[in-house]
Every structure is written in structure tokens, then in C-alpha cells.
Length: 637
Image (tube, rainbow, N blue to C red; front, side, top):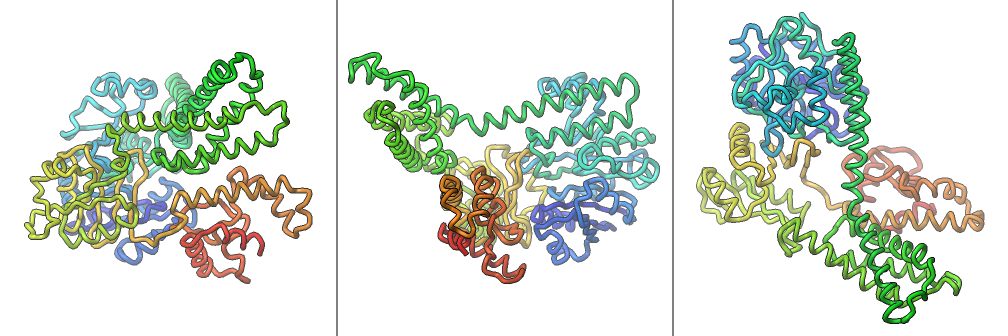
């Protein structure tokens, strides 16, 4: 047998299906076998492989054993002259393996080989070729010099940026996303080191291949799509910890003396530095808008207080210090919390939600004001006119931000997606049916095909694609694998560049899939049932119900003893208030439904015995028809 392909899967069913379809085409003229090792996925991956790809050798693990162990399970059973480790979030061209194996056969010293990889937007992935992470190379990467001087032979060694990405080269390190190895080399140097759970195992094996006298190559004459790049968001603290700890294992295994100590020092320093950067950056991304608006609100009301004193009351010292230290802060906090609960920070440019949030906040301020003693009630006028001032300031601020970000004052235009399909009319009609249930602002412009059509939706041929995108203002292109090859897809993506977003609809499938960058999670659009809980406002209502009920139970704790469920309610009010639980959650694993926190009660409160199928049906009905009355019935049952 010529080739054995090993794919380790964990909860990426639709990416895996697309990958296997492309692999099936690519091995049609090759003596090859395909293994899928499933690390205890719960998303239906196993059923999908059995149903659609019965020829695939499926290995099912009862737990997530990690990347190295899973790959080794299949490698030990494989029989190919070459073994390819392939990520499930990849697509390979139809002639990929033919070209690659011809190249490998021509290099008798080839132990391993990688290829030219692009992400879901057609951007080249620098991890396609890498150098050995010596202490010096690791230092330059950690402090960012490899990005500042990517083509430097001194600073750019981590990704070998000085080597032409369009030409074949000898390299040090292969990427585990696509890693072809000669069986003889594996027999000599051994399989993946199972000490590495995830990350680092490809570096270790690549290094052992070169230490065994073999060479690793970068093959540029075929290009694959690797949707998620390195399959992790680089600014997550979990990634930082796992990846750099893997580097410590590598250093302890292969370096000695001063080099090992130096490398470990760099790595451990990097862990804390990058973790700190991740926390800081994620915090800024998540909270900068509310934080800035808190400042704007506070400054606005502080200015209004001074104006009120000077021009209305004509007494510069009429308000005591408590106005600044207590009243203005709680005004500001009330407005911000109301904006958050109303969903204004999710739909930042929905001015209806902005007005609603401010008015709810003002109502809360008025209630608190009414409960204060007379000596702490300073001015209803400031509350009233402060509401108008804050609302005006936020409207102006968000309008200016929208103009700076999107270069337009057309607030609806930002949500519009203008998409075209590279494929035939029947596939285009299918795509419309899939996408319209996800976004009502989708503008389905038409399809592009080299087969001329009399349909009014036919826009032109492939060589007119740039003009079509420019004329119609297209921002999304969907490739149909029924009509266009993977190689043609990659070519068009490279030609068009990052001006639009790219998706694919695999051959004989009913879903659209893609990714916007190497650091982004994949995006999936499939035929779905409209779920009430998918609506952000409905989810906000559920969260508001949780908070209100939990707060009321805590405040009324002395009176709650008259209810039989009082102990349960009091026990879980804290976790619900903190967002760790919800009063009513799903009864089953509910993988295809909107995410909910674990429930104090479940949708199956009326079932007398456990029945998985009924539980799944109840969860679906709950998500589809949710109202707060359903939660009330569950809590009182």
C-alpha cells in the first residue's frame, strides 16, 4: 500500500465530513487507506463517518486521549509506505497526493514533508515551514522580532521567512496539520512521543527525523486549506499554558546543560508574559466600550452638576461631596447595567436598545432615589436632564464610532451580507434556503459559473469575478465543490485576496462552512429549525428572570420558609445570580441547541423515569418555544 492517512477528530463533525470528501477524491487513483481516530466526540462525528464513509477505518476512543496517542493508534495499524497525519479542518486538492508522492519518491532522503497551507481566507500560513526552536530562535519569536523582521536570516528562523514560500526547500520542522512521513523513517526514529498531549509533538518528531539522518522538506507545488490555522486562539491563556509547557518538555528531552536552562528560562518567562498579555488584551477587547461609556456618563453628569449649581441654583456649593462620591457613581452604574441587560452591548448600534436601556436605568435610579432619606435627595432635575444628556452623548459617541469603523452613517448597511455562489443555479437555490434562516439581512445576489445560463441570477464567468465583486459590492463568496475543484478554489482565493469572506459548500452536502482567519473558530451554517432561545433578546430575558428571581429569594429569605422548595432555592440563588447556573436547563447533552448553563431544574421535570429520546425532544421544544412562564412552571412543579 502506498499511503496511509490518519485523521484525529474531536467534535468537528462538519469539518471532518468536508475533509473526508476531499480526501476521497484525492486518493481515487492511489492505493491508500484512511483512518479516523475519534477522541470521544459527542457531536455525531462517529455516526457521520459510519454512514457516509463506510470504507474509512474508524477507531473510537472512550476518552480524549490526546493527539499523540490517537495518531499512534492508527499508525500502528497502518500499512502504507508513507503515513500522512492530517487535521480534520483541512481540504486537500484533487491532485494533492499524486504530486506529493511523486516528489517524495524522487527524494530518497526524505523522512518527512509539509505543504503550502492557507487559511479559510486564502492567507498563507507561516507555520507551513518552520525552523528548529533553539533558545536563540525561541527568544526572537517570544519578543516578536520574527514578525518585525520576517525575512531576516537571523530573526526570521522560526518560520523561515527568508525562504521563498512558492519554492520547495529543506526545512527543520513540519506542521502536525499536514505531516507526510516515510514509513522507514518512522520505523527508525519511533512514533509520536505520547508525553505531549497536544502541541509540540510535531516539533519533537520532526527533530528526531533529522537526527536520524533523514531530511524534512517543504513542498510548495500543492496548496491545502487549513481553516483554523493552528486551531487555537493565540491570545487564550489555555493555549499559552499548553503550548509553552510542551516547549519545556521538548527542551528537557533534547537540550542539555546551559542550553536547556536558558531555553526553560525563556519559556517560563514567556508563559507568564503571554498569559498576562492575554488577560489584559481580552479584558480590553471585552470591556473597553462599557468602561469608556462609564467615563463619558460620569463626566457628563459631573459637568451637569456644576452647570446646575452655577446657572439653575446659582449656588456653587449647594451639593455636598456625597453627590460626587455616591449619587453620580450609582447613576452611572444603573445606566451601564441596564444597557448590558437590555442587550445594548451585544447590538451596539441598535439605538432602540440604547434608549430602552437608558430609560430602564433611569427608572432604577428613581426607585433608589425615592428610598433614600430626605437629606440624601439632592435633585430630581439632574436625574431628568442627566438622562437626556447621557442619551445624547452616547448617541453621538456611537454614531462617530460607527462612521470611523464602517465609513458610513447607514447603520443598516453594516449588517447586510452580499453573497454570490461559484457554482450552478440549483446549488445556489439550496444555499439561499440554508442561509436565509440565519440572517434576514442576507442579500443573495446570484451565482457565477463558466456554464452560461439564461437565469437572471447568473452574473458571469470565473474570469469576470473581480469585476462582479466590485460592481455588486460583494463581501462574501461561497464555493460549491460540486462545480469547482479545491485547486481552483485556492487559486481564486489567492487571486481575490482578503477583500471578501470565503465559504464552501461540500459536494452532495447541505451545509455551508468556513472560517474568517487562522485564529477564528470555524463557522457552520446548516438547515435548522428556528429556535426562540437563539434570539439574543430572549436569552437576555431568561438571564434577567434568573437574576430577578435569585435576588428576590435572597431578599425574602426569612419568608421563604413557607414554601417547600425554599431550601433548594436558597442553596442555588447564589450560583444563579453569579451566572454559574440557570434555574431551568436542558435535560440532555443538547449539543445542537443554544448553550445554557447547568440547570437547577431541567426540562424533564414531568418525566417519571429517564428517557434520553424524550429528554432530547423536551429540550428542543423548550429552546424552540421558550417563555419565562416555562421556567416558572418548572420551578413550582
